Length: 286
Image 1: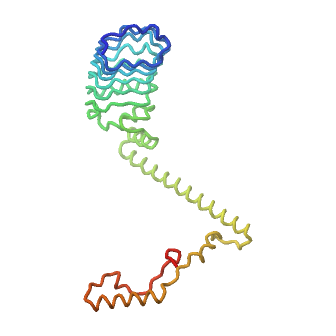
Image 2: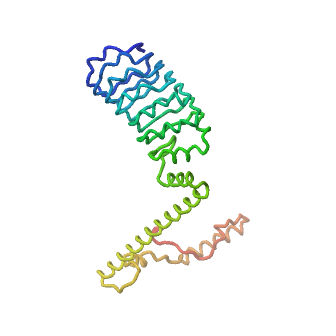
Image 3: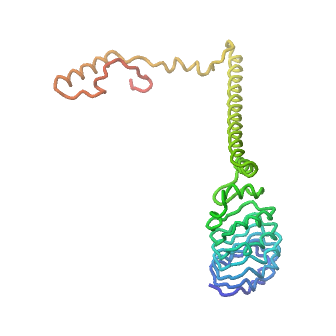
């Protein structure tokens, strides 16, 4: 791969730049690309984040799989919303404290680093637009007691944490737990279940009433007496009458059973059933 960034000056209107899988040790050489929105420099040999000052319009930066031990120099990108820095060397509170100055970031991916200080939660609290946070693969996940409930209740803007979204019910439960402990959490769970059952019951009653109104309206249009039965279904009753089996079939089954007994053959449960049965004429041939 390439060892340095150069000769990009003529691409002044480029919006996405893919430089992954090279040998860059620095981002020096990036020209002032005013239109650049997305920069992908994962899988290089970068030791620091720098030379982004001229990229004021940058929206997405992926700097994963490098040798980054300190997040820095991002606040010069006021429009940065998605920052991905997985599989690097971040380990301490100080190594990511600069994120508190990056107010525009909404999606932050720090998976598979070495972060182990529960105090990093205070940094995320200072990010007013943080929506999606990924911390899987860091020791801090097991260091924070009640990890998921703690983060959700501490970051009110969060809508996605690690492997799944944060729905309204989960947030209500986490907030109750944070404010009133387990008792408040149980009470909130019970209330949410009752509210859901109430919604289902109201929907069922509404649909039942809707159907009943439709049946009454149909009977009225057909000049039938007012009842709850559907005239369209009543007309099907005669069509699907199920008659008894013909006497000839019953007699033939009995003769077959006698033949099996006479020749010492085993009589299975099917052959032993000689009582008249009913069948649907629409299911057999003439």
